Image (cartoon, rainbow over all chains, first blue to last red; front, side, top):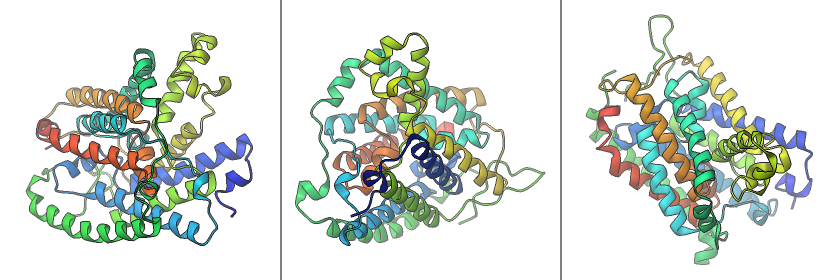
Length: 198
Length: 181
């Protein structure tokens, strides 16, 4: 096994941060190319006339998932060396609900806000400032809540929980993606009238 | 489907349409995969904001921040700005700029629906950012770290987070319709 690279060859700080910068370059390029520097394009998914958000996210997840599964299957990649945020269901369910409210009210998520502000969107700047105020106020006001969130979580994957091999889950996700693609096309036709004129 | 045009499409130079979402998603997936196989971790975003907030808090006294239960996670031995995620987002800003420049979509505008003032839109964007920050801190990650990276790793928490995000946003979409349509 030789991957992930940094698990077997510890990088110096310059290499580490340089890698982050380069990966970020690709990250931001893809986000903007998909139209995710635009709040109206992003929230269109919630009015069902443009499902690009689901298409992009789902395709990205399945692409990375397939790559990870194949690299692990041929013995090149050590999956256990990859960091996964611990699962703590009440925290992730509650956090997801609050986050979803922020998404539809604000029009962005933390990453897409950066794509927006870098391309001139004032509302992207406002969202990013709200994020800064949010993480700062969370740190000052909610250490108790944060301790609750951090308490008792452990890495938990579908593979470990169900005992079904990663290969089967990956195949299932690919099949679901193909079915979802048809559903999305139907939704976009059905709700085309929601598209704003300008 | 008519080609989407960005909000820079004025008299000067027409904005080029966005890329095909399936192709953009595939490329984003390759970037995510590269992050996993090189660095052993997925993409993220929210930790960059926390690193900035911790850096600012550190100006008021390093000792308190280093001992603080939340800030300590981002203090990085006194160098909070040398954060992986902060550099990732700095790169993302440059990447988005390059893509928009190439696509003639750079424009200083306030994105909003036709029935809402720019001022209201900016206030709501700020409020949304504030909510999203609390949600992401509670969930220990956002659409990048939990949904994309967690989803690709089949993380149960990441998939539950993603489902909860869509549930809340669809439930509230009718109430904020005026802002967007």
